[in-house]
Picture 1 (cartoon, rainbow, N blue to C red):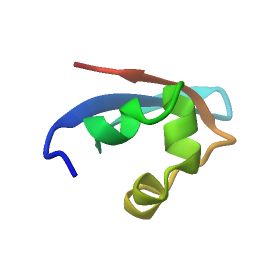
Picture 2: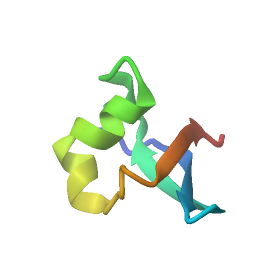
Picture 3: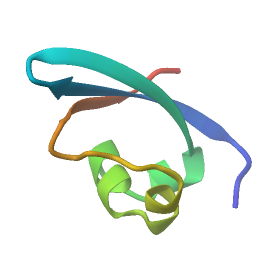
Length: 64
């Protein structure tokens, strides 16, 4: 697997308050999915590394 990482900013909302988290995901894994959100929700490697509250996630985008 590639050692190249892509910085991804996750924006969450909780009771009207917004906060963000920056994570790094293998660039190769992101390229395997048509949408970044699909990678975050479906890729087993990503799911093992991150705990995502998908119900509170309102945006995810590359921060590079």
